[in-house]
Image (tube, rainbow over all chains, first blue to last red):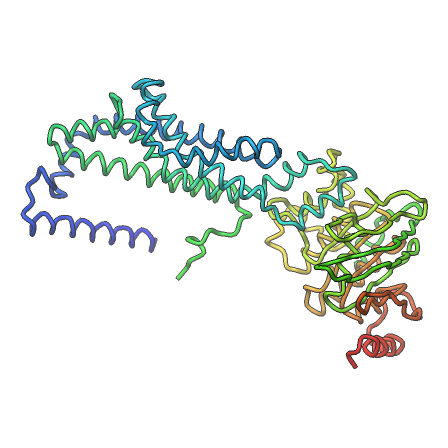
Length: 256
Length: 254
């Protein structure tokens, strides 16, 4: 309850700063519309905003799923096989070193203006955090547990140890990766929409921008932010529900 | 100790297995912690290995458990001449319970790792035996330190191996819990070949059929004279107190 109150207070403060910037700076609406104008635009364009938000949300969610599957699979391969480490680790690092921004036009060229290229962007942008975090978790299985398994097993069974000990032990690390992924996946989707699309919040923002509908742009931005925050908290709550045995994350442990 | 469950049949090993370790050697940082060390564990005998910290007790125990590392070597086999692989159970100072599994699933971890069907009946009997019948489905993080170590003891017994190696399994517990768990371990491990590593002289005197003192550098093993009585001995018994003073003198603490 206190968290909600704090959030509302924060929102009120931001609106106040925004309104005073507009009023005191005498900014014209095509540079910075005041909150009321944005709210009006939000109301006026609710239907189209919702439609575009749906497209963007679909891109983000599908990108999250695909990126998690690919990243999870890669991390498992890296954790399981030395050969995979030798071949896949450079790919993993390259996937992060090459800016997604740079290959966005290529992806649109190859996968078209539809959902495909945006899903690919979101997938690509979350692939690294998911893989890196999960792999890190897989590498740092507490030694005592591995010793225990070694004594219990007459002959080494790497897959059994991975399945019963290393993977569950690495799930909290995968969870950290997924939280980061939830925060950056919208970037991938919107970036894809900017490069070339006919739907989605990113498309709507570019479209509004070129017609000087700055209030609509801000409205779309607000919807996008809500979407991103909602996604993050959904993922966070889902992880807490799935990993009840994991000690609370710092933010919940921090009670005052 | 647990009259309600004492009547439940509890399997003891078919035949005790004696263990022989020869020419054990541990070199760490160019320094030999021990070299040419011989250790015999009599079959069905509870042996305590007592020594100060950093002497190499844990390394010796890990060597027996087959947890070899760089710099440590030795010739290890049972008295039947076969290697010990698959005939050893291991219990560490940390309970090593997997936090995502229930206590019951932790106890049956070994069979699941080996791809066998877990014997839940037996696991539940063992949990009752260590006084955790009501906690079978609880997650480890809801248990106290003593209860967690009881669960670890049940897991060790579930493996039903002739040789049990324990590395300071009770040293993280408060004094009363420790005394109770020592009694329980002495009772439940009877008939198995046990090596318990400890730095607590009283624990060694309370539990050991035989007590070996590991001391010096490179370390050597010297047996203490056999104590009267059957473990778990009363820590206040005169013979225990006399032996305790002798150990302190031997280790240079008094």
